[in-house]
Length: 345
Image (tube, rainbow, N blue to C red; front, side, top):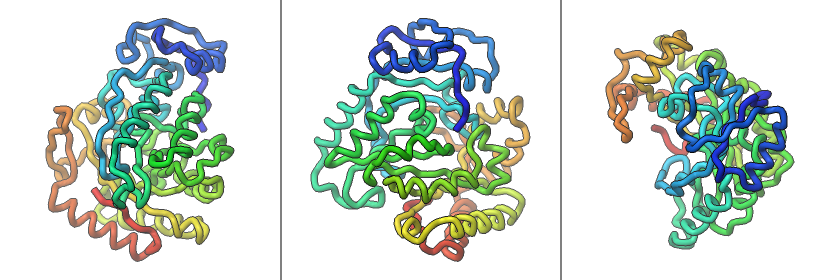
């Protein structure tokens, strides 16, 4: 886990409830500053990575909107946090904010009440689908990395307990970090952790300040043993070097096959998500991580796509991407046929 020890904590007045006070107590040496809005920060005079390392924001989540997903989960839950310690070159959360430190939302009770009301309004029993055969699944980490947040706020532990004990709901989140503290919590298979994986050398370039691929793979058995349901994300799949990406993914699949115990393989499924990149993020990366852009911004393979938020994104050309997915799934079937693909996108 990263050594996250903020020197500055910004907070809104309504965030200083029990959860917020506990966070302030956890970092007694940090300077504190009151702000009016958690998403409108003062000029901090720090660069991109310094802000992620040194600043923590406490706020309350005003909108409790729950959105349909149908891919990683049935629904996307209201965020427990926003932002991340990591600085991944393709992160869609960073592209929507000028500065993006970790923001913890301390009104956990209100967020979980909204989820409870939502899930109890759904038809029951739930129709089985690829997200889960029994429970309604809620992605609790779309805008942050829950493995990092778990270390900072007992509100995350409260959320884990909520989903573990709920008769109809189940939590899921993707992560690029391994937090050993989470192993002491037994979620009774009601929390699904999805470790994001890609070839090691590419991860070193684009998964900035995250745990290594080897460390993530090595943790899978431990998290299953602790009571988690464990899946993996092959995300984002980045195409490079002619056919080199195929060779590297074959090696990654072999690493996974060698590392996992039979009972873990029996329950493990995967998601396959090919890269979508963004013009604004491309421009920012040219200043902070230009080598990554040689992999991420490849116009001869990509086409424009206007996002739902109005941004100019690029993704692999439609017909070419269809062939890429076929190649990827064939490689996977050859090396790890025990790994079911939940969906490819």
